Amino acid sequence: MEYVSRVPRPPLDGLIDDLYYLEGTPPYARLMLPPMPAALLIVNLGAPFRIRAGADDETDGYADGCVVSMPTRAFEFGYPPGTRSVGVHFKPWGLAPFVPMPAAELCDRPVTVEQVWGRRAVAGLRDRLAMAAGPYEMLTVLEEELRRRLCEADGLGLVRHASSVIGAAGGSVAIGDLSVAAGVSRTHLAQRFKELVGVTPKRLARIHRFTATVFAIDPAGPVDWGELASGAGYFDQAHFGHEFRAFTGLTPTRYVEVRRRFLREHPDHVLDGWSLPVD
Image 1 (cartoon, rainbow, N blue to C red):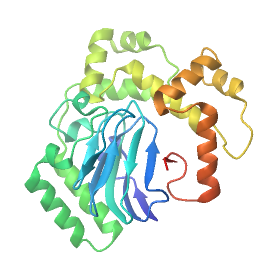
Image 2 (image 1 turned 90 degrees about the vertical axis):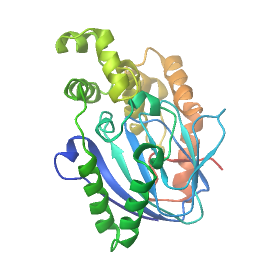
Image 3 (image 1 turned 60 degrees about the horizontal axis):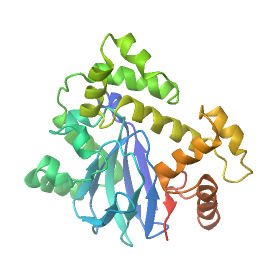
Image 4 (image 1 turned 120 degrees about the horizontal axis):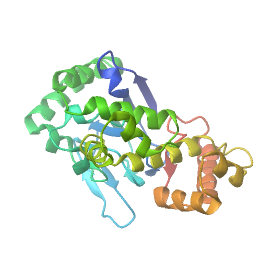
């Protein structure tokens, strides 16, 4: 697969981790993406893909793409044989200035891009992307669209600062201290987070801690689960295992088995590192 990624220019770089282009045949027909501290927008340019947002939910098709704020559970993506898309990985607070609804309405509820930006606007964007001369020009087209749609979001400075503190601490931070430092109540801070991030500060901290722990795992070697859990600030290994199952549906040992399968079958693949095979 071809994967091209770049960071947008200011001021978008304060809201977005990267813009990306993806094309080719996925390593597996179905991939599971564990939750991570980021919102996602995909503009689809190929055949429709499918998403299941939880083990008990039905799979829905997305022809024009999808938008989802901070996920709190694993998503299953069903890719067509030849996928082609551009997308945005937003910082936790980054989606809010580009959508007309509270982020909480999009949490674990993927919607089409058309539902957010309208049919005519999305059709025009897809046409411009289709006419672009290659991935880098396509990312420029996407960046220009985002720059045009950028709006003010009330309370964004507060949420951005608190989210940055949570991220820098790897999720190991007292939420009460954040509200005291910001000079607002915990209720006010939680409300702003729900509006702009989609989840409470406590939930964001949990996702940051889980993500940092997962990235600390080396699937190619032995894993000391007790030491890993303790280093990440979990109360004990049982707490760690509970969080793992809550976020992925897998036990930690099963997660490593699946990661090792990906590494064995597709070494150095562009999607390795977060995506997991479902098949």
